[in-house]
Image 1 (cartoon, rainbow, N blue to C red):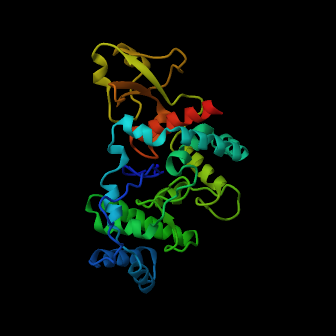
Image 2 (tube, rainbow, N blue to C red):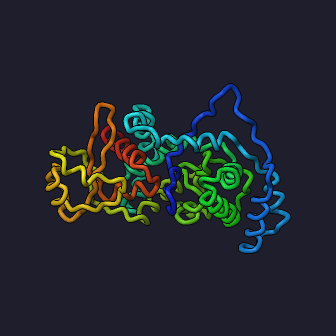
Image 3 (cartoon, rainbow, N blue to C red):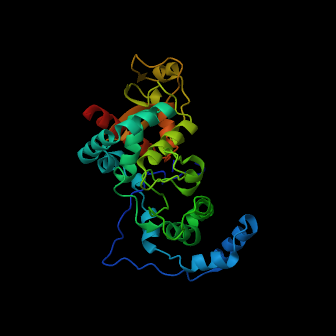
Length: 332
């Protein structure tokens, strides 16, 4: 799957589902025909960050435009109804994988949970939703992904132009070859699928080996997720979400697309929402409605659900992470 957040990252940290291109043959990656936007970008990087113009120009000569990237971002998984979206991420296979992953890295996961005061099952579930526990980290050259979206996809060009800038700075800071790094179609990288700005701001060198390696160092990847949540306001000891019953019609006034908690528990109950009895009294929540396929289901989501959504702003993504985490925890 936020991330990995500035503007909405349908894609971080995300949960970026790579969707195959339709048709018999996908178009082959090609050089950029219009070089004007790239030239302007290079000039900006030279002026602002002291890059060598010849080196940067040569680098972008090797970048390729992928039509499959534009096709994929045009139909994200988050556009599906909940009952279809859930089937992608909350599966027996992913639950079993989560149990095995947790057992294999139990000591590291425990240390991460203690250091960042986050729930271990949530950290595990993020890695599960994003990359199936590191098995599918993405195969697109990140330079190609970000260049394609920055220079050939106007709806999100501003956002991805910024991420391309962060990527070049990141690879310079981390002493990485910008041509060699691989990721999702949207430029998300490593086991936790951090976008470039998230990498620069939240990635952690957990084992103190001098590198922040989110591709092959599980400790760095897990700790980076923990740090991401802590920095975005995770609160230890409070719940994430509760499925609830609703009565009457007044509750509809509280339904919100925003996941930021805004209603007191008294306000929720007065609107016809039945809450569990064991919730800390001083926390606020918000009411959301999901399509179960057999009708609507209602959830009150609390601050920690909102924190998960900083990784990917979709309610569907956050709910998939939460439900997968609970299934993994129960299966252990």
